[in-house]
Structure formats: structure tokens, C-alpha cells
Image (tube, rainbow, N blue to C red):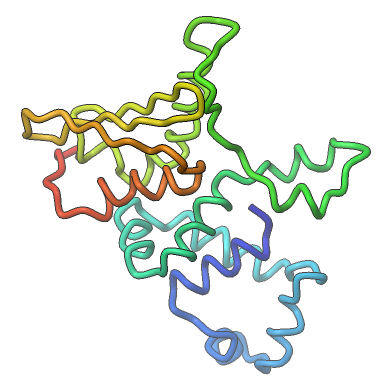
Length: 195
């Protein structure tokens, strides 16, 4: 996730507009708008504000923030979370870096593996990118399986005896993660106490 995307996420999370930021910093609204244009580098003072904001978010605050956003905003949050690291992008050659900024990690949906467990571990790594939101607090287990491009989500809610099996045929990575959110952090299901 780049600085501009993180800035947009911070503004949305705090409910701030450029006018609010201008009032706080003593700048004009136009200067904030100009300084945060996608073709300009984010000012150092704003990078500090973004880092402080991100470090103070708890999983509950982030989940509550996501509940208030539109589905498309949540999709963008998921894409940003799965975006390739900027350090990695600086090492790549012979590619259009602007095109790469639009890419993100995706589930391996074939279900085929060269080494036993390889596909499962890779896909679990993607799901775990969202563990800090508390998705596992709602379930005794949550498991994602793919075979020939077709996904299935298996889960059992905390304090329930019923196993759920949700078919995810035709879903992409972002839609699958959103479905997990719908079944966990966006649900009213009971959670286990972790503190």
C-alpha cells in the first residue's frame, strides 16, 4: 500500500476532509489538496501522521471503521492490504511500475501442488493478512480450500456445533476475503475472549 492510499484510508477512518486537515495544520484546503495529489510525494509531516494513526488502531477500531464503509471501499482496503510491498517494487526491472501498483496477491485457486501443503500454506498466508482484524475470534476454525478454481470456505462458529460450508465458485480473492468479513467481523456472532 503506497502513502497516498494510506492517507486516503486515514482520512476515511477519521472522517476527515482536506478542509479538516487544513484547519488542524494551519494550511489552506488548496495546499492540502495540492500536497496530496497522486503525482506528488506525500509530505514528511503527513507520513508521520499516517504512521501514528496506523499504530494506534486496534483490531476493533479497524473492524468498526470497515463496517461503516461502502463495499467498494472495503474492497479497496483488501486490495491495499494485499498490495505488493514498495521495497519489492523498487527491485523489479523491465515492468511498468504503475501497472504493478494496481496488482495485489491472489489466492492460488487451482488446488494443485508441487509439494504437499504448499497451496494451503500460501492461501492461509493471504487470509492471515487480516487476522489482526479479529476474523478468527468468531470461529473455532476457519479453513479455505480450492480445487480446479472453485473455492469452499469451511468454518465453525465459536460456541456452535454446526460446521458451515460456503461455496465460493466464481469469486475472486477480494470477494472471498469480503465474504470472510461478512461471516466474521461484520456479523453479530459471539466472539471468544482473547485478552
